[in-house]
Length: 302
Image (cartoon, rainbow, N blue to C red; front, side, top):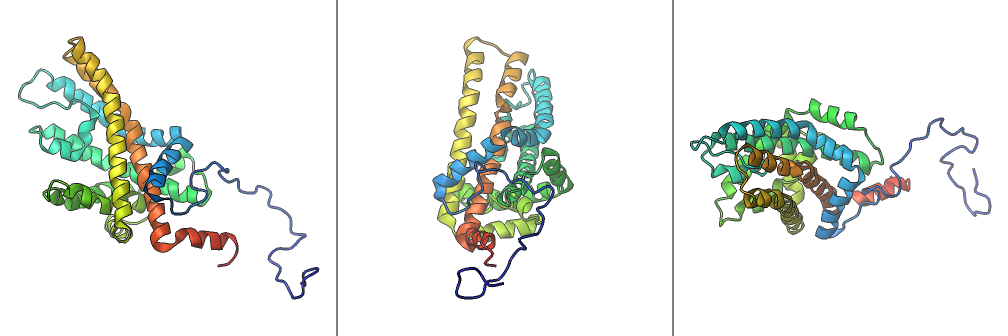
């Protein structure tokens, strides 16, 4: 129908007498961290990871706790049983879940928990990737919806972990920095698998395709996230462990204190996943213009 006061004909996109939906969808609000996607640079991505974690802090920490708490409890049992045995190198804190840190240990338990921890970290990445996709579409899934979806695709986590380790561990032999250089190519693989619903091999391929085309930014985000989470872990762990050593506490009490301080992984693991998720969206904007496509869709141009 012609537009009043216009010189040409307009195209009606909605009827004026059409009733409003009974329950219109409710968005996430203006304070949601993924409401206005655009390239923001390395520091913007790191800050965006913190913003994602703050936005639904309890929900994201709860997702991480689902697999991490049983693993930490099992690790504590091993620590307590091995504390009096000089033949075993006991796990002192959950920070030993870092695979490379444990690879130099003679303890098989250290390597086992490091591998399990890497799988758990990948699973959390899957869950956060699916969450980031939903938030970017202004949808707020519940904790049970996210956990259920991630559990249904739990098989992806161990396979994806092994594939990424097969890429990063050989690279670690290159000048002492190869691990980080390779990690920058695949550190978003888990969130890609969750956000784009890909299998492990397709997720790695997609991660490399995005990161290699904007590698300086990907490397900066990867290193920045590693530094932030490492410093956060160190700050939280040093205090209790210093008190233990100062007062000469040993044995069971020291082991329990160390493991309790190591609960900081309940924050650092989802934070790492949030930084990777924000990096995934950043790289999609830089490489594919995903933010421009989204703006065009909102304006009805596509």
